[in-house]
Image 1 (cartoon, rainbow, N blue to C red):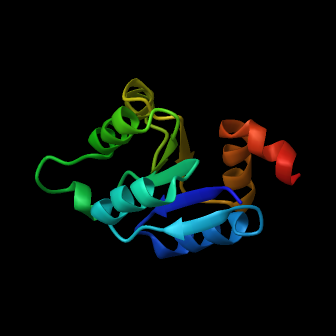
Image 2: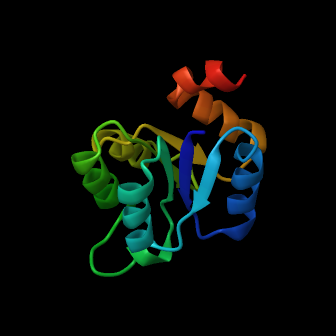
Length: 129
């Protein structure tokens, strides 16, 4: 079964995402950025969702953009989707500039999560649909 990792501080949306994906994928929850990077290295996921508002990005110059760049530099085939609050065009463009594969906007709806995964990982859709 294909693996998806979620780093999302907002518990409600994290659970919505988990519940919408767990029937079709092996879903894991990362506790923080360091845990996310270890999980990526050890578990070989196909997709990662990263909360752009994660509090760990507030210090030391860390941002969701730098994390996406770091992931894409080491794992070129891994798909990365940013979870964002607003549809700010500059933020959306920046996600794509740094190599992000998509954006999921809050509030999170289960059907949007599945649509996002199916759009980004179309080869997996045919296997599980």
